[in-house]
Length: 304
Ligand code: GUN
Image 1 (tube, rainbow, N blue to C red):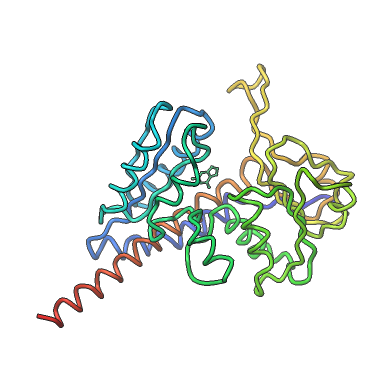
Image 2 (image 1 turned 120 degrees about the vertical axis):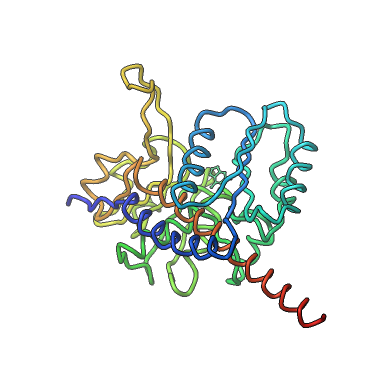
């Protein structure tokens, strides 16, 4: 078997095209959807991610305010900035690129973001809403994976989905979303404590790798005909590469593509979906702001 290659770029463009008129509608009402993007330090991968996010916002005619802070920034300084952005009515979303330098508590920083502006879906309130199936912002990468499965019409109901990795950003929320009634997969999460990993991955109808280890998933770990979603983006050093490194996923792509029915490439698979879902969340945040402002204006009129 040779797998169908899932074109995340094409599907992400479709999502972005749906976002465009919504952003235009807001602009017509004098509201420019705006995301504050905070990067602390100079991690090259993080820098390339935030640059890509800001470029996508500009292409959708949305605004971004970028804050590039030195690695020496204190937690207090970062929290002060977040409080300022929480209070700024012209900012609809706040994104703090992770990971943060070790001296800053990610938990305190994420919790400081106003949940109404938490377009990453990382705040405990957003996580709680997601788990309870209530409206709220869904984390971008897991949401993007669900959209890929839906767009490709990959059957999920009753499927055994195996998620490799238990991060707060991908593994945990993705496992949760896969159990939603409208997805209805049976989910196994594997992590560093898992025994006989291959025995479990070989049972997967849908195998999702999100561990951050290049080539971890080899062909012998994959069931014939499985859908394989590769969330990993790893820089593998190679002096012969133009940039000095190659981007590789967590999956041994060439060999697994011979066995799977569907596979996402790296780059060009899940990555573009993360950005598209972020744009969707930003426009959603701005729409909610517009709605609440409308209600507020209405009630003010009423009370006069
Ligand atoms: N680091 C890796 N992925 C993400 C993401 O989706 N959002 C943020 N803020 N940081 C990340």
